[in-house]
Amino acid sequence: MKVSVGAATDIGQVREGNEDSFLVVAPLYAVADGMGGHRGGEVASSLALETVQGMFERKEGSLADQVVEANRAVFDRSKNDRSVSGMGTTLTAALVDGSRVHLVHVGDSRAYLLRGGELAQLTEDHTLVHRMVMEGEISQEEAETHPHRSILTRALGVDQSVQVDEGDVEVADGDRLLLCTDGLTGMVPEGQIREILLESADPQEAVEKLVKVANRAGGIDNITAVILDFSVDGSGPGETKRSAIPQQPTMERPVPPPAPPKRPDITIVGATIPQPLSDASTARGPSTPSPAARPAAGRRPEAPRRSSPSVGRKVGIWAGVTLAIVALAMVGLRLYLDTQWFVGVSNGRVAIFRGVPTEVGGFELHSVVVETSIPAEEAQALALYRDLPDGITADDRTGAETIVESIRDDVARFEQPTS
Image 1 (spheres, helix red, strand yellow):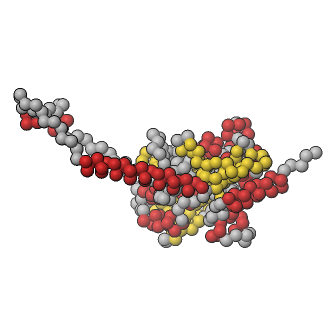
Image 2: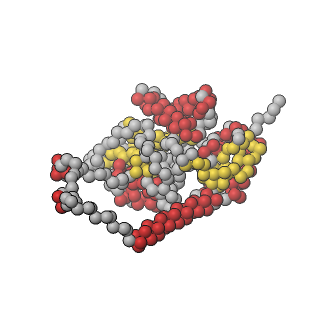
Image 3: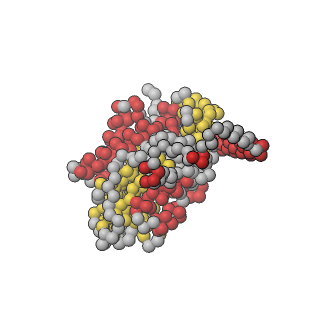
């Protein structure tokens, strides 16, 4: 079975850094979504994949064994390096062996199989809301907007040991396998993912389109996708070698959120490329006015004509319109931020914030509304709340208060008794 590969990762529209990593070292492919702050998340995801890759190349253990060792590596680094304390990562990997694909999985990144026009999810999300769906507490529709939907129940690096899901899939000619982080699935509905996978025959074109659509939907998280196309004759465009280190990100304008400010480390997709000058223009030296353009000898050049009053009025009108648009944009942004809520950390304690958990140009787009008495360190000691510093989003203030109460109850429940 021949495999053609496409892979892409992107910073998204909101995050300040890319905490995702991916691995393409045929026949091994993987994605990882780090957590624990910018530096911690980036270290966790890259360290996990580097550990798996190293063991795989040395032929040490099974793929599941390699993931277990990656868990140990991330956990030990988190314990020994205070700058990345509390970090962790998801990991979803596929090992191709002929027509058999062996999958291993921890966290809420996903593996999908497109076959015969139908898209099927192969992995199970290790999240609190998925567990609630399985236990019948909420519906699948409620899970999609639940305030706890970003809380993981299982991840690499948060405990000394980890349970790894694994299984085999038999692939056939024409099958397409997608590995992706939740930066894609959280922004793009499965139906639209299926349409893109069906429309784009080239795997690299397909992953780039998936990233583009996720960014246009808002891009609130890093986005990573790896596509494997299977064929018996190798008629695909061929394998694409990629590094586990995140690529230089690209950015698409989100719709409807306002576009972020220009940054030198971001390449705007679709930017116009200046055309080279023609031979005539490059051969000609500095331009000189033609005799007809020079004032005649002995004559005073004509005084410049005063611009028409109507021109001044037009300039004033356009300036006013521009100011009005800017003012409306600021008002719109303020109204939008006032409707956003999340739970995070303030002064070492769990707190409720209004706004979004990020900053632009040094300005924070959020403010503390309630600072609780719950120590953030105790909450982060629980696997469910390792990502607390990055913010746990809520639909409204009531939802944020519900999250806080859940944290309070969980901290009390798991608190070690004192002797």
